[in-house]
Amino acid sequence: MALPEKLDQVVLRYETLSAEMSSGDLAPADFAKLSKEYSDLTPVVEKAKELHRLMDELDGANELLADPDTDTDMRAMAEAEVLEIQEQLPALTETIQKLLLPKDAADSKNAILEVRAGTGGDEASLFAAVLFRMYEQYARQQGWQFELMSTNETGLGGLKEAMATIKGHGVFARMKFESGVHRVQRVPTTESGGRIHTSAATVAVLPEAEDFDVEIEEKDIRIDTYRAQGPGGQSVNTTDSAVRITHVPTGVVVQCQDEKSQHKNKAKAMKVLRSRIYEAERQRQADERASSRKSMVGSGDRSERIRTYNYPQGRVTDHRINLTVHQLERVVAGESLDELIDALITEAQAALLAESI
Image (tube, rainbow, N blue to C red; front, side, top):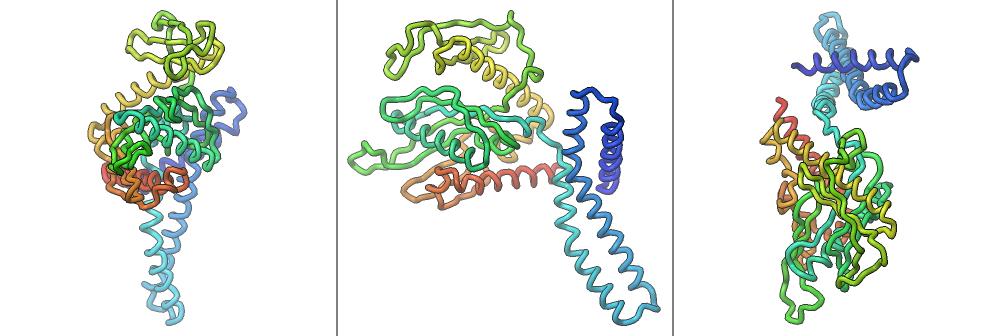
Protein backbone atom coordinates (compact mmCIF):
# COMPACT_ATOMS: atom_id res chain seq x y z
CA MET A 1 0.00 0.00 0.00
CA ALA A 2 1.31 3.45 -0.94
CA LEU A 3 2.21 5.89 1.83
CA PRO A 4 -0.65 8.37 1.10
CA GLU A 5 -3.20 5.55 1.33
CA LYS A 6 -1.72 4.34 4.61
CA LEU A 7 -1.89 7.85 6.03
CA ASP A 8 -5.49 8.27 4.91
CA GLN A 9 -6.38 5.10 6.82
CA VAL A 10 -4.54 6.31 9.92
CA VAL A 11 -6.27 9.71 9.87
CA LEU A 12 -9.66 8.05 9.38
CA ARG A 13 -9.03 5.71 12.32
CA TYR A 14 -7.85 8.66 14.42
CA GLU A 15 -11.04 10.60 13.72
CA THR A 16 -13.17 7.51 14.46
CA LEU A 17 -11.43 7.04 17.81
CA SER A 18 -11.97 10.70 18.67
CA ALA A 19 -15.70 10.39 17.96
CA GLU A 20 -16.05 7.18 19.98
CA MET A 21 -14.19 8.64 22.96
CA SER A 22 -16.39 11.75 22.87
CA SER A 23 -19.62 9.74 22.88
CA GLY A 24 -19.56 9.15 26.64
CA ASP A 25 -20.90 5.61 26.14
CA LEU A 26 -17.68 3.71 26.80
CA ALA A 27 -16.85 1.60 29.82
CA PRO A 28 -13.68 2.75 31.66
CA ALA A 29 -11.64 -0.21 30.38
CA ASP A 30 -12.74 0.39 26.78
CA PHE A 31 -12.06 4.12 27.07
CA ALA A 32 -8.55 3.41 28.38
CA LYS A 33 -7.86 1.03 25.48
CA LEU A 34 -9.08 3.51 22.84
CA SER A 35 -7.25 6.34 24.56
CA LYS A 36 -3.96 4.46 24.29
CA GLU A 37 -4.51 3.77 20.59
CA TYR A 38 -5.44 7.44 20.06
CA SER A 39 -2.27 8.52 21.85
CA ASP A 40 -0.14 6.13 19.76
CA LEU A 41 -1.61 7.51 16.51
CA THR A 42 -1.25 11.19 17.46
CA PRO A 43 2.40 11.63 16.36
CA VAL A 44 1.62 9.89 13.04
CA VAL A 45 -1.36 12.17 12.37
CA GLU A 46 0.66 15.28 13.25
CA LYS A 47 3.38 14.30 10.77
CA ALA A 48 0.73 13.41 8.18
CA LYS A 49 -0.72 16.93 8.49
CA GLU A 50 2.77 18.40 8.12
CA LEU A 51 3.34 16.31 4.97
CA HIS A 52 -0.04 17.39 3.55
CA ARG A 53 0.83 21.05 4.20
CA LEU A 54 4.20 20.73 2.45
CA MET A 55 2.63 18.99 -0.55
CA ASP A 56 0.01 21.76 -0.85
CA GLU A 57 2.76 24.40 -0.69
CA LEU A 58 4.78 22.48 -3.30
CA ASP A 59 1.77 22.32 -5.62
CA GLY A 60 1.20 26.06 -5.18
CA ALA A 61 4.84 26.89 -5.95
CA ASN A 62 4.83 24.64 -9.03
CA GLU A 63 1.66 26.32 -10.29
CA LEU A 64 3.40 29.70 -10.08
CA LEU A 65 6.38 28.34 -12.00
CA ALA A 66 4.10 26.89 -14.68
CA ASP A 67 2.27 30.20 -15.13
CA PRO A 68 3.94 32.27 -17.88
CA ASP A 69 2.55 35.46 -16.31
CA THR A 70 4.48 34.98 -13.06
CA ASP A 71 6.93 37.86 -12.66
CA THR A 72 10.66 37.39 -12.04
CA ASP A 73 10.58 38.04 -8.28
CA MET A 74 7.68 35.66 -7.68
CA ARG A 75 9.34 33.03 -9.88
CA ALA A 76 12.55 33.27 -7.81
CA MET A 77 10.59 32.93 -4.57
CA ALA A 78 8.69 29.91 -5.95
CA GLU A 79 11.92 28.22 -7.08
CA ALA A 80 13.47 28.74 -3.63
CA GLU A 81 10.33 27.35 -1.97
CA VAL A 82 10.38 24.24 -4.19
CA LEU A 83 14.02 23.55 -3.32
CA GLU A 84 13.36 24.04 0.40
CA ILE A 85 10.37 21.68 0.39
CA GLN A 86 12.22 19.05 -1.63
CA GLU A 87 15.00 19.11 0.95
CA GLN A 88 12.50 18.57 3.80
CA LEU A 89 10.43 15.79 2.21
CA PRO A 90 12.88 12.82 2.42
CA ALA A 91 13.49 13.19 6.18
CA LEU A 92 9.80 13.76 6.89
CA THR A 93 8.81 10.75 4.78
CA GLU A 94 11.35 8.53 6.57
CA THR A 95 10.07 9.71 9.96
CA ILE A 96 6.50 8.85 8.96
CA GLN A 97 7.55 5.44 7.66
CA LYS A 98 9.25 4.69 10.97
CA LEU A 99 6.16 5.77 12.89
CA LEU A 100 4.09 3.42 10.73
CA LEU A 101 6.30 0.40 11.44
CA PRO A 102 4.55 -2.42 13.32
CA LYS A 103 4.92 -1.93 17.06
CA ASP A 104 6.09 -4.57 19.49
CA ALA A 105 3.10 -4.97 21.80
CA ALA A 106 5.48 -5.42 24.73
CA ASP A 107 7.38 -2.15 24.17
CA SER A 108 5.17 -0.17 26.52
CA LYS A 109 5.58 -2.65 29.38
CA ASN A 110 7.86 -2.53 32.38
CA ALA A 111 10.75 -4.99 32.41
CA ILE A 112 12.17 -7.70 34.62
CA LEU A 113 15.96 -7.72 34.51
CA GLU A 114 17.95 -10.88 35.24
CA VAL A 115 21.76 -10.86 35.40
CA ARG A 116 23.70 -14.08 35.96
CA ALA A 117 27.43 -14.79 36.20
CA GLY A 118 28.64 -17.05 33.39
CA THR A 119 32.01 -18.57 32.63
CA GLY A 120 34.98 -17.15 34.49
CA GLY A 121 34.55 -17.98 38.16
CA ASP A 122 34.91 -15.12 40.64
CA GLU A 123 35.73 -12.65 37.87
CA ALA A 124 32.43 -13.50 36.15
CA SER A 125 30.47 -12.81 39.34
CA LEU A 126 32.28 -9.49 39.81
CA PHE A 127 31.42 -8.54 36.22
CA ALA A 128 27.79 -9.53 36.79
CA ALA A 129 27.75 -7.05 39.69
CA VAL A 130 29.20 -4.35 37.40
CA LEU A 131 26.44 -4.95 34.83
CA PHE A 132 23.70 -4.95 37.44
CA ARG A 133 24.92 -1.61 38.83
CA MET A 134 25.19 -0.26 35.28
CA TYR A 135 21.53 -0.98 34.63
CA GLU A 136 20.51 0.44 38.01
CA GLN A 137 22.35 3.69 37.29
CA TYR A 138 20.98 3.82 33.75
CA ALA A 139 17.43 3.35 35.03
CA ARG A 140 17.84 6.19 37.54
CA GLN A 141 19.19 8.48 34.82
CA GLN A 142 16.16 7.69 32.65
CA GLY A 143 13.82 8.57 35.49
CA TRP A 144 12.69 4.95 35.84
CA GLN A 145 12.08 3.03 39.06
CA PHE A 146 14.57 0.25 39.79
CA GLU A 147 13.19 -2.22 42.33
CA LEU A 148 15.42 -5.03 43.57
CA MET A 149 13.71 -8.42 43.51
CA SER A 150 16.42 -10.86 44.55
CA THR A 151 20.20 -11.24 44.75
CA ASN A 152 22.57 -14.14 45.26
CA GLU A 153 25.86 -12.63 46.30
CA THR A 154 29.36 -14.08 46.51
CA GLY A 155 31.73 -13.35 49.34
CA LEU A 156 33.87 -11.06 47.15
CA GLY A 157 31.24 -8.46 46.30
CA GLY A 158 30.18 -10.28 43.17
CA LEU A 159 26.81 -11.64 42.12
CA LYS A 160 25.93 -15.16 41.11
CA GLU A 161 22.60 -13.77 39.99
CA ALA A 162 20.34 -10.80 40.60
CA MET A 163 16.88 -9.71 39.53
CA ALA A 164 15.09 -6.38 39.46
CA THR A 165 11.91 -4.81 38.14
CA ILE A 166 12.35 -1.63 36.09
CA LYS A 167 9.28 0.55 35.78
CA GLY A 168 8.70 3.61 33.64
CA HIS A 169 7.74 4.88 30.20
CA GLY A 170 9.10 2.77 27.33
CA VAL A 171 11.33 0.62 29.54
CA PHE A 172 11.11 -2.63 27.59
CA ALA A 173 11.37 -0.84 24.23
CA ARG A 174 14.94 0.16 25.15
CA MET A 175 16.04 -2.52 27.59
CA LYS A 176 15.10 -5.48 25.36
CA PHE A 177 18.27 -4.95 23.34
CA GLU A 178 20.39 -5.88 26.38
CA SER A 179 19.44 -9.57 26.39
CA GLY A 180 22.33 -11.88 25.62
CA VAL A 181 25.85 -12.76 26.70
CA HIS A 182 28.08 -9.86 27.77
CA ARG A 183 31.82 -10.58 27.75
CA VAL A 184 34.52 -8.78 29.73
CA GLN A 185 38.26 -8.70 29.07
CA ARG A 186 40.37 -7.31 31.90
CA VAL A 187 43.11 -8.08 34.42
CA PRO A 188 41.51 -9.41 37.63
CA THR A 189 42.63 -7.84 40.89
CA THR A 190 43.82 -11.28 42.01
CA GLU A 191 46.02 -11.71 38.90
CA SER A 192 49.64 -11.12 39.86
CA GLY A 193 51.05 -11.72 36.39
CA GLY A 194 49.01 -9.00 34.71
CA ARG A 195 47.33 -11.43 32.31
CA ILE A 196 44.04 -10.44 30.73
CA HIS A 197 41.19 -12.83 31.55
CA THR A 198 37.96 -13.26 29.61
CA SER A 199 34.74 -13.80 31.56
CA ALA A 200 31.06 -13.53 30.78
CA ALA A 201 27.67 -12.78 32.28
CA THR A 202 24.21 -13.40 30.91
CA VAL A 203 21.51 -10.74 30.78
CA ALA A 204 17.83 -11.48 30.22
CA VAL A 205 15.23 -8.72 29.92
CA LEU A 206 11.61 -9.84 30.07
CA PRO A 207 8.48 -7.72 29.56
CA GLU A 208 6.58 -7.67 32.85
CA ALA A 209 3.39 -9.57 32.19
CA GLU A 210 0.06 -8.49 33.64
CA ASP A 211 -2.48 -10.94 35.03
CA PHE A 212 -4.53 -10.66 31.85
CA ASP A 213 -1.49 -11.39 29.63
CA VAL A 214 -0.97 -14.90 30.96
CA GLU A 215 -3.50 -17.12 32.66
CA ILE A 216 -1.88 -19.61 35.03
CA GLU A 217 -4.11 -22.24 36.56
CA GLU A 218 -3.42 -23.58 40.05
CA LYS A 219 -3.40 -27.15 38.78
CA ASP A 220 -0.51 -26.31 36.44
CA ILE A 221 1.93 -25.18 39.13
CA ARG A 222 3.84 -26.96 41.86
CA ILE A 223 4.98 -24.89 44.84
CA ASP A 224 7.84 -26.03 47.09
CA THR A 225 9.04 -24.19 50.17
CA TYR A 226 12.46 -24.45 51.80
CA ARG A 227 14.77 -22.61 54.16
CA ALA A 228 16.53 -19.63 52.58
CA GLN A 229 20.32 -19.76 52.34
CA GLY A 230 22.97 -17.10 52.06
CA PRO A 231 26.51 -17.15 50.62
CA GLY A 232 28.30 -20.38 51.49
CA GLY A 233 25.04 -22.18 52.13
CA GLN A 234 24.38 -20.89 55.64
CA SER A 235 20.75 -20.51 56.68
CA VAL A 236 19.46 -16.94 56.73
CA ASN A 237 16.05 -17.72 58.17
CA THR A 238 14.57 -20.10 60.72
CA THR A 239 11.42 -20.78 58.71
CA ASP A 240 10.72 -22.21 55.27
CA SER A 241 10.21 -18.79 53.69
CA ALA A 242 11.92 -19.48 50.34
CA VAL A 243 9.62 -20.49 47.48
CA ARG A 244 10.19 -22.51 44.32
CA ILE A 245 7.40 -22.55 41.73
CA THR A 246 7.38 -24.99 38.81
CA HIS A 247 5.04 -24.48 35.86
CA VAL A 248 4.45 -28.10 34.92
CA PRO A 249 3.26 -27.65 31.28
CA THR A 250 6.33 -25.63 30.26
CA GLY A 251 8.90 -26.80 32.81
CA VAL A 252 9.69 -23.19 33.77
CA VAL A 253 11.06 -22.98 37.34
CA VAL A 254 11.31 -19.80 39.42
CA GLN A 255 12.56 -19.47 42.97
CA CYS A 256 12.67 -16.53 45.36
CA GLN A 257 14.12 -16.27 48.85
CA ASP A 258 14.82 -12.54 49.22
CA GLU A 259 11.94 -11.75 51.56
CA LYS A 260 11.44 -13.10 55.09
CA SER A 261 7.78 -13.63 54.25
CA GLN A 262 6.85 -16.76 52.31
CA HIS A 263 3.79 -14.91 50.96
CA LYS A 264 5.94 -12.09 49.52
CA ASN A 265 8.40 -14.55 48.02
CA LYS A 266 5.55 -16.41 46.36
CA ALA A 267 4.12 -13.18 44.91
CA LYS A 268 7.52 -12.22 43.48
CA ALA A 269 8.08 -15.69 42.05
CA MET A 270 4.65 -15.69 40.40
CA LYS A 271 5.38 -12.33 38.77
CA VAL A 272 8.61 -13.67 37.29
CA LEU A 273 6.97 -16.94 36.24
CA ARG A 274 4.19 -15.08 34.45
CA SER A 275 6.72 -12.87 32.65
CA ARG A 276 8.87 -15.80 31.54
CA ILE A 277 5.89 -17.65 30.12
CA TYR A 278 4.66 -14.46 28.42
CA GLU A 279 8.09 -13.81 26.89
CA ALA A 280 8.41 -17.41 25.66
CA GLU A 281 5.03 -17.16 23.90
CA ARG A 282 5.87 -13.71 22.56
CA GLN A 283 9.15 -15.01 21.14
CA ARG A 284 7.42 -18.01 19.58
CA GLN A 285 4.90 -15.78 17.82
CA ALA A 286 7.64 -13.43 16.63
CA ASP A 287 9.61 -16.35 15.19
CA GLU A 288 6.53 -17.56 13.35
CA ARG A 289 5.84 -14.10 11.87
CA ALA A 290 9.36 -13.59 10.59
CA SER A 291 12.08 -16.18 11.03
CA SER A 292 14.52 -13.74 9.45
CA ARG A 293 13.79 -11.10 12.06
CA LYS A 294 16.42 -12.61 14.39
CA SER A 295 19.21 -11.62 12.03
CA MET A 296 18.33 -7.93 12.16
CA VAL A 297 19.88 -6.84 15.43
CA GLY A 298 20.12 -10.20 17.10
CA SER A 299 17.56 -12.48 18.55
CA GLY A 300 17.69 -11.39 22.17
CA ASP A 301 18.64 -15.00 22.81
CA ARG A 302 20.47 -15.40 26.09
CA SER A 303 23.07 -17.62 24.41
CA GLU A 304 24.03 -14.97 21.85
CA ARG A 305 27.24 -13.04 22.54
CA ILE A 306 26.21 -9.47 22.00
CA ARG A 307 28.83 -7.20 23.56
CA THR A 308 32.46 -7.12 24.75
CA TYR A 309 33.82 -4.77 27.42
CA ASN A 310 37.60 -4.48 26.97
CA TYR A 311 39.10 -2.67 29.95
CA PRO A 312 42.77 -2.43 28.80
CA GLN A 313 41.64 -0.66 25.60
CA GLY A 314 38.81 1.26 27.28
CA ARG A 315 36.33 0.16 24.63
CA VAL A 316 32.91 -1.45 24.37
CA THR A 317 32.00 -3.31 21.17
CA ASP A 318 28.48 -4.35 20.23
CA HIS A 319 28.89 -7.31 17.90
CA ARG A 320 25.36 -7.15 16.46
CA ILE A 321 26.00 -3.88 14.64
CA ASN A 322 29.82 -3.81 14.77
CA LEU A 323 29.79 -0.59 16.81
CA THR A 324 32.72 0.26 19.08
CA VAL A 325 32.73 3.17 21.52
CA HIS A 326 35.85 4.17 23.46
CA GLN A 327 33.96 5.27 26.55
CA LEU A 328 33.96 2.13 28.67
CA GLU A 329 33.86 3.89 32.04
CA ARG A 330 30.93 6.06 30.95
CA VAL A 331 29.08 3.05 29.56
CA VAL A 332 29.39 0.97 32.74
CA ALA A 333 28.33 4.05 34.72
CA GLY A 334 25.13 4.05 32.65
CA GLU A 335 25.96 7.46 31.17
CA SER A 336 26.82 6.42 27.58
CA LEU A 337 24.67 3.29 27.35
CA ASP A 338 22.14 5.30 25.33
CA GLU A 339 24.69 5.64 22.52
CA LEU A 340 24.65 1.86 22.05
CA ILE A 341 20.90 1.42 22.54
CA ASP A 342 20.03 4.29 20.17
CA ALA A 343 22.23 2.74 17.48
CA LEU A 344 20.56 -0.64 17.97
CA ILE A 345 17.09 0.90 17.70
CA THR A 346 18.09 2.74 14.51
CA GLU A 347 19.44 -0.49 13.00
CA ALA A 348 16.28 -2.38 13.94
CA GLN A 349 14.09 0.31 12.39
CA ALA A 350 16.19 0.35 9.21
CA ALA A 351 15.84 -3.41 8.88
CA LEU A 352 12.08 -3.19 9.37
CA LEU A 353 11.86 -0.42 6.79
CA ALA A 354 13.80 -2.49 4.28
CA GLU A 355 11.52 -5.44 4.98
CA SER A 356 8.37 -3.35 4.46
CA ILE A 357 9.42 -1.96 1.08
